Image (tube, rainbow, N blue to C red; front, side, top):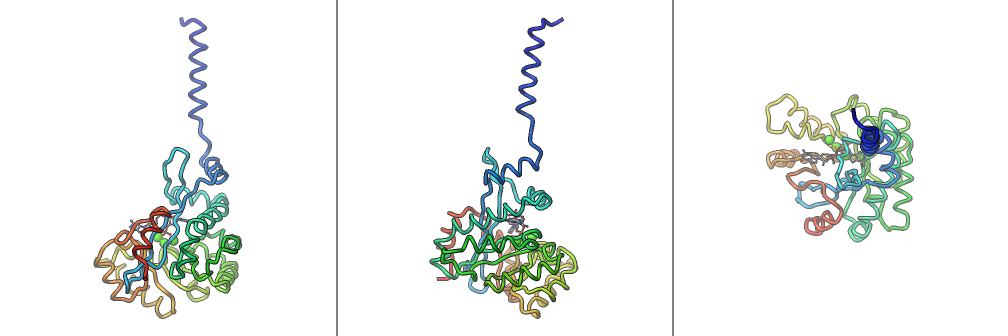
Length: 277
Ligand code: C2E
Ligand code: CA
Ligand code: CA
Ligand code: CA
């Protein structure tokens, strides 16, 4: 039999360990991250295929936890979208983009930044107010801001139309993201006011393969052209894919063949070396 003192000591140690190990729920952690503004934005260069020059970047959010680990967006955006936390996260992304790249955007009108919006951002329209508030008195032109939304953002077609119409009348360009991965894409393309279409990586991946999908890629390109939409192909990893896209006169590309997403300071240096002039 153990003396009472030792038992008590063991219980105390156990309680201490339990207390330290006890974690907030994932949602609790994410809302704390929002309160503490733990999000950072990385920038993936967007290249004009014809010239090979950088004309912009897509802002891609990461969650930097207090221990320094970076959490990829696909691991927390779904929870943020379900819980409504996406709205303040989008606000933080917008403010970071403007504060980090303001000087470069004002000194070079050829630079564009694409910001991802979720379905709730489109539906509430709040993101447009956030962008307008962030741009106020900065000298950044609305034409330098591109907004991206997936088909899920367009499912509530009436509110989507209102938000997109407002966005475009302010001067922002609007792109449909991950095109082809959702559903009823075609009806959105016909009825919503859009400027550009982003071809999802899963289609770019099929270029040069003899899979049935590779002909879908060709059809997406020709359809976008018929509708007068600009085209950005994402996830370009090989020279063969780039050559194919150039041959089919896709205007813009993003992908590891050119550059991965990088912190603001690195992107600013990259842009100075790779911009059009
Ligand atoms: P997305 O909008 O389709 O962004 C492209 C993703 O593909 C990025 O992943 C990018 O780093 C990755 N990527 C780009 N080029 C290549 C390539 O050549 N090869 C490969 N294997 N991957 C490439 P990331 O940054 O992990 O973002 C994942 C998704 O998270 C994004 O997909 C977007 O849907 C979402 N996301 C990112 N930032 C935000 C944000 O600020 N707001 C919202 N609502 N969603 C965001
Ligand atoms: Ca995107
Ligand atoms: Ca995309
Ligand atoms: Ca994608």
